[in-house]
Image (cartoon, rainbow, N blue to C red; front, side):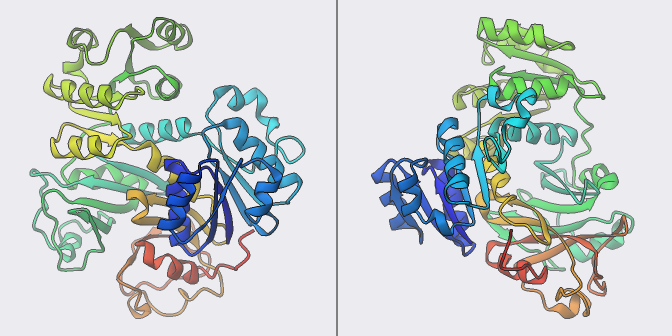
Length: 458
């Protein structure tokens, strides 16, 4: 595919790198010659210096032959205008724009983004994507990742292996004997920063992140067997009532299953607005690193603290303070990789990476055809892919064992006629099966081949 990326900031450069690694022809546009030069020297991509919404710049970037444009500059208006120009002049088939301002995303204006008005094919709102990620992690507290696949029939879960995990040093092939009804597949491990596809005689060790696929109804049991019997959070303290925090608070306020939520916001007007808007939420005016305020929020009896301010320092410190005061779990929004590493090494909480969430939300729209969904993990070092098996797929015929699939991918689950099938070596795949596959980046093209994707994605 020929893809234009407008914006060479952190997210834009990461997306360009990932798309290039996947074999796409990528051109990046940015007004900073320094950023463009840096990326073109580092990556196998083209670069154009200029304004991403100017027709002559888009022409130079190859818009007439482009299959997709991703507008991810720091300006909503430039992103929308770039999509307009790409559609009206160059007829680029698919146009993705990052839009952050809530005024554009108001449901009453939903007919704004049409081919006759503002032709944005896909809107990515980082704040909404992060908020959805937080809600999923609150749903199953022991899971670092909780991603639904196949219309939420399957769950992809990531679980930290701690000292109290009851199956440490247990070989993979023994797990089925120990838990015959578990129906959970360990598709991958993150160990010492490296992704591993486990073999039958591999064992879990303390510090691993285990990646699992299981039916939704068994997800809580699976998590408990891996050492995380925590119940769904019923008492939550949220620090920061800004764009992300207010989105999360609103989602929680609207849940059918009620959560006891307290929001701490230091800005007077923001705190008042939240108190007026949210019906079932307690709002405190103050700082998330003020121990008196944390105690007023009853942090010692809180199941989960979520810190979503604009400051990494505040989010990190509030997680540390809440952990020391007896809060069972902390989630901190952290942009800086140093803080992310530190919170892991000190074991004071989990981090939310907004850049990784945004990138993954964009990448899932890059593929179509028989690949229905893609979720990117660990800055693109692993992918979880959902696809439907066509009649011409190479998956049909041999058993999974006879396919000789590369070591870099693992089939995690199969849904056939609404029922879950746990894949084993003797399993045969049929037309119409919906499959979830865990893959390293170097095997993505093999996954596309297995699903018999046409070269024309659109």
